[in-house]
Amino acid sequence: MDKIRESILTKSHASKLERRGKIISFMCLGGICLIVLAIFIFIAYRGLATFTSDHVSIFKFLGGTKWNPEVTENGHPLVGALPMITGSFLITILATLLALPFAIGTALMMTDITPKMGTRILQPVLELLVGIPSVVYGFVGLTVVVPFMRSIFGGSGFGILAGTFVLFVMVLPTITSMTVDALKSVPKDYRSASLALGATRWQTIYKVVLRTATPGILTAIVFGMARAFGEALAVQMVVGNAALMPTSLVAPASTLTSVLTTGIGNTVLGTVQNDALWSLALILLLMSLAFNLAIHLIAKRGELKR
Amino acid sequence: MKKRWPLILIGILIILLGFAYVTRDQSKQGESITAVGSTALQPLVEAAGEEYSKVNPGIFVNVQGGGSGTGLSQIQSGAVSIGNSDLFASEQTGIDEKKLTDNRVAVIGITPILNKKAGIKNLTTKQLQAIFTGKVTNWQQVGGRNQKIVIVNRTQGSGTRVTFEKRGLNKARSIASQEQDSSGTTRQIVATTPGAISYVSFSYINDTISVPTLNGIKPTNKNVTTNKWQIWSYEHLYTQKNTDKVTKRFIKYVLSSHVQDELVPQLGYIPIKDMQVERLE
Image 1 (cartoon, chains in turn yellow, orange):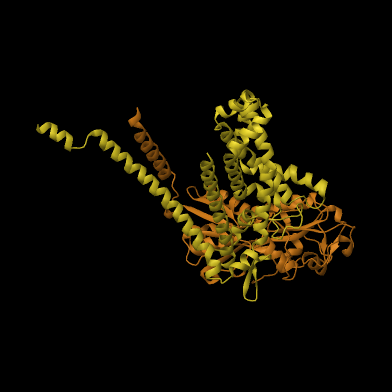
Image 2 (cartoon, chains in turn purple, red; image 1 turned 90 degrees about the horizontal axis):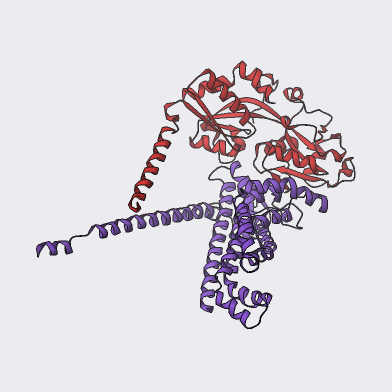
């Protein structure tokens, strides 16, 4: 009796293992949460210093068009971030719009039209594109795209259009591979049913497959935008880094990331110039948060429809 | 097999930590010197550091870039032994110069550079100022060809830009324009963009760009030493007031005749002892 009682009351080896596993998992989770939280607090603390200790009004920061942190005007440093914000958004949106038709076309080739060729040729090509470091894209942009722009549009060739072309190649694999996943998750029955009703392949793709996969494709777009928005090096090499409101697509402009990467080495921690850069970093962080939220919202709405 | 993976993971972690420990930075034992900052000064400190290690085995000079601002803020916080800077500490906001010792090791000249198609042989300071402040937008207005002026600046706060604006533009500020964070890229852009103007240190002058005279004076090292050519700056190795012996000895080595007579001119800098004038700010 006692033996049975004992074996029931004491923990078995398996349950001990389970507990140990749980503790390890929770510790990993806690560690990651802590790191994310620490990053948030640090960037927010530094980024908000522009407004709290340097007394720059937040509207002047978001709406001002003059970026010259070394100069003070009426007692306030000139830190208008609108040119960079506009530049970042313009490049992101243009690159994504440009990549979208290519991505959907490629993805359809891979899932519905020629799946064999898709997995054999297109998949490795896309993976290769993902693996190329961004500095290589930037370098190619600097030596090929920029002179090309210069020969067609004149000026220096640097600008939003050059950045768009470089980012287009960079976000294409992200959007394509996620669109492929979305298309693959459309149940086969849908396609079969559509074909059985007498629809052509084009009609099936257009009216059934793409419609069903819309939430997935939207998620792919947002992911692509998030990548484009955060890309620093490649864009910085071709955009020209002029903190001016973009007046044309082929005139030098700047993005949040390009101003950050070029400026951070020339400022001293704790000065207005440095704080202003941290504020730009804060905007980047908030934007990536917004992109994440958008992805969750889309996923939720997509579920409801089904 | 399944149970082994945590062990393997821990094993890898231990190996990594062990490796990190073996290869750890041993600067606290006074055998390594870390110098951080100006990219313009980096080649000289690197070359001097290499030679120094040859003469003094066991002492390693670790040189990193990052910009003059980084160099000054790192030395101020005491994170490194030497802060490399193109600027006086007083020229950088947020730096308390009284806490630092200034060691000037070389001088570097900076010159405006033009795209060859601008068709300009000489510029006056007034013209240069008018170009960079946006009052003149076509090369025709200063005696060149009918070609729009494209200004290429270095990043705000970069040592070269601060010096150029202070000495070349008489403290005027350039209008906002495209900015590049390296001299090499700047030169390439000026070489390939019609009507482009920028500025680089003397060591970046080559055949792909044209170098105008300024007020009739040629940008040569000799003219810098007599201050006839006024756009130049010191290269500083900043240290903390009471730095350790190893760092002091290294700086003495950089100022020794071997480095000053051979390495400094070889790498395109001007030796400090050749200067016939002195600047205090």
